[in-house]
Length: 183
Image (cartoon, rainbow, N blue to C red):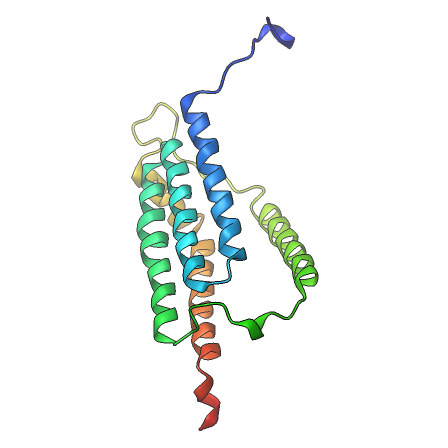
């Protein structure tokens, strides 16, 4: 049976099925990151989320990005988060006094913030183009051309993310240290 234009239905390939499964794992664990009540469990679910994203990169044959994801985000960022939790004496379990009951308002603010961020990224990078070389040339898609593209075109978002992570760590230290204002 042929569909419109004489093209029949093609069953999904193994790579497509694996990509869908990894995406489902990443999405499910990302939801658990923000809904769990224990901070250490949230950090461990973050490891699962970032690992599933690295798996998606592997399925898409972007091995360099997969290793960058594992080494930098899973290895460095999550370890930094866990060390920040341990060094600041933050409560590991759930704390009953921290729930303000404004979940509906918080969900509305989160959706609005996500909308603003997505629209800003789409608007800002709509015309961005990363030339990775000609399709038939030896350097097309190589680590060298990808590195040049990252450090010429995409260096500003990476640096902004590093500043954001540093600010979040400093804010976590300041907020968790209750004895700083008692001097």
